[in-house]
Every structure is written in C-alpha cells, then in structure tokens.
Image (cartoon, rainbow, N blue to C red; front, side, top):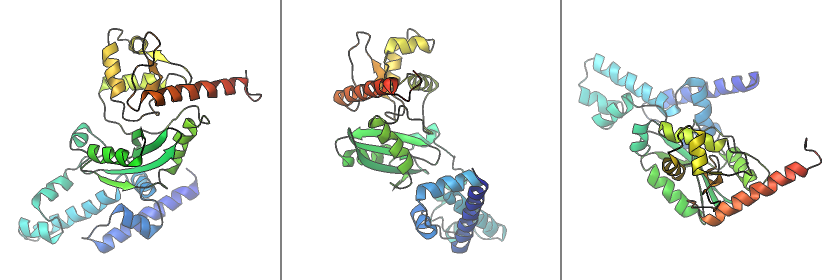
Length: 291
C-alpha cells in the first residue's frame, strides 16, 4: 500500500468514526455509510477493518457498550440503561458484548449471525455466477441458469447475516473469475474466508495445486495428502467445496477417466475442463511463451 493510500484510509476511518460518534446511540448500516462517504460498502468494510482492526458496526457497538457501562456506573438500573443506549433487549446486549470476529464454526452454525456478507451476481459463459464475500475474503461461489435461485441459496445458507449486494465492490474479484471462465485467466488466486475441517482444508489445498488443464482422481488426491485409503472422504470434501472454480473441484475425475459428478452440472464440468485445455494449448504455442 502506498503512503497516499494509507493516508486516505486513515482519513476515511477518522471520518466514519466521527460520524458514528455524532449519531450515537443510533447506528448506521454499511449501505448508509457507503452512500455518505461515496464508497462501496464492501470496500468501506475492508478498509475500516484493515486499518482499525474492527468493523464499523463493531465500533458503533463498542460506543454503545461503553455508554451502557457509564449509565450503570452512574446508578441507572440495568434494564433502564439497556433501553437508554438503544439495545432494545438484554439479549442484544449480550450478543454484542461477546460477538466473535470472522466466520468461526459457531458463527456459521448460526447461519452467519453477526456477519455481513456482500454478494454479486453476473452473467458468465456458463450461465450465471454468484460471488459472495466477507471483509476477509470470498466465502461462496456458485453457478446456475438464473440469478434468483443462486441468491436464494445464499440467503438460506447465511439467513441470519446482513446480506448486501455490491456489484461494484466485488467487481475486481468477479472480473478475475469471469476472465478465467473465458480462458484469459489461468488460475484464480483470491483471499478466502471458509469454514472447514482440517481434512477438508488439506484436500482443498491439494485441489488448488492441480495445474489448469490437468486432472486428478480421488485416489490420487488421497495419496497426495498422505491418506491413500481416504478416497471416499476426499470425494465428500470435494462435494462440500463452497467456492466453485476458486477451489477447482471440477479437475477431479474418476479413476476410469470418466468425468463423474459435479454440483453445478456435468456439462459445466466438461466445458470448464475443455476451456482449460484450450487455454493451456494456446499458452504453450504462443509466440510470447517461454517454450
């Protein structure tokens, strides 16, 4: 990050904090803050978190919690203090005062309670593409024939999260994935925010190590991670991959070289592998290649 970018981010954080302090005890949504400061909600969240270590909402919650403590120290009844600072109920107080950061397993089991999930849905060579992310990274990538079912699926998975559509904010990441689907981008290297077991993460890392244009069988992946008898478990980890394309589970085929299954449709899997093969051949025979 350049010095100018650091100064701009620090200035943004200062102005957002001043605004939240000014309107306290009322808070403001990311959409409202984005409109006020002329910045994408996703970029506002990422910049604020990167510079301050917490999100704008967590900063507002800290103001509210400190005000609550001050009211109690002055002798106010707890129930009166809860309503005076705008919690609405005691449960909201305890939620906010002990809220975890990031997508811990417990947060995911609560279907994203306390999180903000940004998403974008765009047409792509394979129909429609949905990309969803937290301020930490991409948490979901899915493919379909229409955007509606993809958005509904996201809403069901993260039912308790604040979900904001932000096509501009996620534009760079979405463009990289679309470029890959069009054969211009050999691999997709994006930050991820995933919930997974240690075994699943091991399998997914191995999938990401498979070069574009190549395939592996379940048994080959199992052997590569040092668990040759775990082919069935590898298949299960592939089936639970939440970020299609970024973790390329489409590069896994059966031992007999048949394609096997694919969550987003076998024709999409066939098209992905063919696009990768053609792109690899073009790079190998390009006059600008090193070969």
